[in-house]
Structure formats: C-alpha cells, structure tokens
Amino acid sequence: MASTETLALTDDEAVTVALLADGTWRPPLPTVDDGSDAELTAALIRGRRSLVVRGLADPDGAMSGAAAEVLKRFGTGPRAAFLLVDAAGNWVPGGITIYLYGTTVEDVEMSHIIDAAGVHYFRVMPPPRQWHALTELAEAVFADGLTVAETGPQPAAALLLVVDPAGAGVKSIRVAKGTAGVARGPVSGTFPSVAAAAAWLAG
View: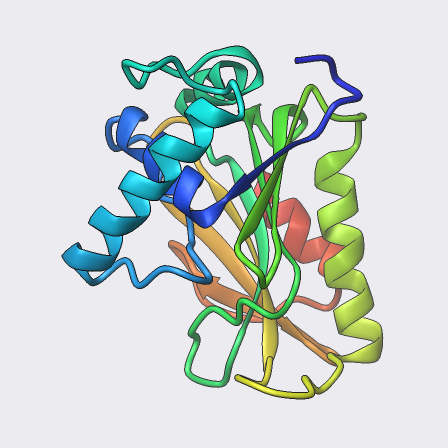
C-alpha cells in the first residue's frame, strides 16, 4: 500500500479486521451497535464476505494487500486522537474523528479517519505533521467553538488525547470555545492555550 493510497473500509469490514487484530484494535462503529452480539455477528459475516469480494482478504479470512498493511499498524497505536463529544462526554459520530498510529505522536505510521456513515479511511505513511494537524483542529475549536449539528447529538467540546507509548495510560484535554482543560490524566486544571495543553499531552 503506497503512502499516497487511501484504503476505505465499511463498519462491517472494520469489525472483521478488528477480530483479526486480536484485541489490539477496537474501532468506533457509527452504524453497528457494538453492545449487541447479534449485530456484531451479522456485521462480521457481511464484512468478511465483502473483504473477499474486494480482494482484501483470502477465502480463509486472512487479510491481503492494503488491508494486511493496515492490520500491521494496529500494534503501534492508536497513539493520538481527535474527536467531538456531547455535554455528557459521549462520542458524537457526526463530527470529525481522527486516529493516529505510530511509536510517538511525531512518528506516525498511519492515519485513520471515520465518517458518520461508518466508513473508515486509512492511509499508511501519511504526510508529516499529522499531530500538528490535530492540534490545529483543537486550536480552531478554541478560537471559534463548534458548529451546531443539523440533526442528532450536539457537539459540546473536542477531545484531543494521547496514549503513552510506555503504557502509562491516556492523557486528554477537553477543548471548547475559549477553554482548554484536562479531561483525563494524572493532573487536573486548565491551560492558557491549546499549544500549552498539547505540549503537556505530548510531553
């Protein structure tokens, strides 16, 4: 899979890949209820068939081609993410959701964007400064706030999070218009800017 190529997987196909990832990847699924065994099983059957038809899996279920390259990267992350949440802190699928995979936030091996329709877009070896792009999104929320959704859950804030490569856990900040504070981590408090918050996250 060349760095200029993007692999698109449906939620159903993502469920199948997640099973093969053996617990190292649990994707958010906008169109599948991951709390329902019946829905997950049906999605798995549809996804496996679809991957074979598309030439992304062998008949025995093993990933091949671009899907195999994506599967390899799940062991390196996710390392960082940007997503929108409602007032209760629940994920809002209608907003932009981005994950970065790699050894650190500055050494990203794969980007992963999820849209509200349940399509997952993967790019192996994306352009540099992916982490910077996530912090710029948070800066935009800090400066201008969030757009009200036409339907469905309303976004109240953006979360920017980093997974410690040493296994010490997750640190995250919650950003809304004019505010940036610790959402999860070993400390609590607010930051004067997203730049200061991002430095704490990546530090």
